[in-house]
Amino acid sequence: MEIRMKYAETLFLLLVCLVSGVFLVISAGYSDIARAVPNICSVFVILCILFRLGQIWLGGSSGTSAMKIHKRAIPFILMLTAYTAGVFVTGFIIASAIFVPICMYWMGQRKLSVVLSVTAVYIVLVYLVFVTGFRMPLPESIVGF
Amino acid sequence: MIYEGFLAAIHPVNIFNALFGTTLGIVMGAIPGIGSSMTMALLLPFTFWMPADGALILLGAVYCGATYGGSISAILLNTPGTPASTATAFDGYPMAQQGRGMEAIGIAAMSSFVGGIAGLLLLFFLSPPLAEISLKFGPAELFLLTLFTFIIISVTVLKESVVKGLIALGLGLVLSGIGYDPISGALRFTFGVPYLEDGIQLVPAIIGLFAISEVFAFVESGGTISNSLEAKGGLKEGFKQTFRFPETLIRSTIIGSVVGALPGIGVSAANLIAYVAAKAGSKNPALFGTGAPEGVIAPESSNNAVTCTSLIPTLTLGIPGSSSAALLMGALMIHGLIPGSALFTTYGKVTYTFFFGLGLSNLFMLLVTIFTVKYLVKITVVDVSFLIPIIVSLCFIGSYAMRNSLGDAVVTMVFGLLAFAMRKLKYPLICLLLPIILGTMMERGYHQSLMLSGGSFSIFWASPISKVILAVTILSLLYPLPGYFRKAGKKEK
Image (cartoon, rainbow over all chains, first blue to last red; front, side):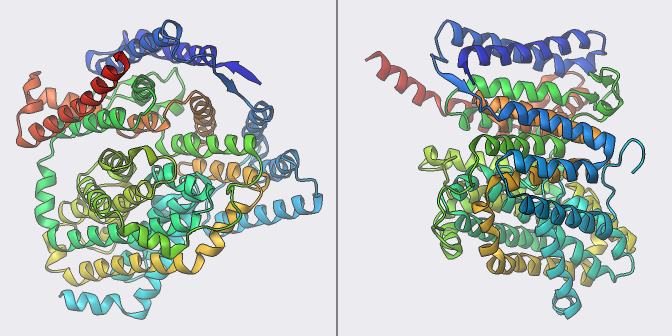
């Protein structure tokens, strides 16, 4: 997937500008001390963004270059999100036992015996080192396992 | 007393403590997010039954080992194991991609050793005077120091666009405002989310910015990390390379030592400052980011110098310079030792045993590297399809484990996505990270200075230290101007 660099960068800058703008507006309700530095920073960011937008659209700084996003990037973002949610729901061990082999298979490892062995060794190692060895709690599920 | 300390340090039990602590530190440091303070916190209960010198050597060795261990994953996976090795990845990883991973680890190990020993010598001989100097750094000086750091990063790091760096810097500063205001204690920008009350946490942010974003790069590239299956340049070459850049080595060690002695700045910033200073002072700044040995020497010598000198305010004044130093202070107090002059007189034997133990730990760092490096570098020729899910999963553990908070894991993922976009758009991640490390300190310094002076800005140039920092800051701003004018002149012609 390709996006013209100037559009991609403009979108990113507008998002950053929005965040800074929201912070600037919200901080109006804070005390002088609490809002002084955030205000300076927000205004500074907005000014820099305006300057950069000028460079992009008037000076042609981004040119005609394109930002390439590999076809695997978007599905991977979804997998990461699902994994994060999975840890909340099923706990770390179960979510990892599902995520690790699926991710390996999706990345092109077709030997199921290898994929499953690596997953099993990894999960056991994590459990032994962190849970048994260091008594470090790993994320548990919302139902407590 | 020093001799007695030496004899106690070379007792077989203490040698074992130093070796075990260093090895454990290296392993835990290499796992993103775990780092020294968590490993030390996990070990602390096991040290209660140990004699004071053994406990301190064990914890100190973990501290030194983990600081170095973070560089191994930074070099081989572009995933800094600890904030201390963030800058090591900038040049270490390109070296690994070129098949020079072993050489890069050699440079990191030797630079860490030199930095660690130099910091230790300072700790040994100059603790009291350095502690006095560090006390002269008031809020105004600390504010100026952070400002100087931001400016020098904006001026020297950014080749393509200073504006992009300034935007990233500003975004980092804005985000560092989330949570409690450091002066009034008012809650800011939390949007009613309790997790945000403590602000953006450094470790999850770093893991997201560098580790998760690198995982995205692996997903896109596939294959193996190293483009060359043939190893070029061995460990010995790395050791030799370290001494081919004596200026960088000395400068970075000094930076690390000074930053370490100042409470509050810490190892996370020291390696970035040393990297930037090395680039600014290099004869070949264009090579930075492409696998320049200086880019590994600078952060590694500085971060291990910090580990030792951060103990100066801890041991002499009872002011811990970092979270790991605070844990060591806790260990001291558990064993009935109170920081202050008594540590160098009444309890001198324990203190000097600890110092020699730290020296041993630095030596073991080199030995462990020599014996394990050929196995470690094999990771660069493993197919990334195996590495991706394991790195993601370890990042999850690392970000969660510090505070047992799933919110930290979510922050890691969010920062990972932000870094993915920024890398695509060629925005420098270092400029976003630095304000998250130093933003609160800068804000606190700014307000405290104005409160002390009754609102007068003259406090920022009142003391000799402030004047020096201001002068250096102004010079850093003016330094690139002749170059810009020359370029502009050439364009006009």
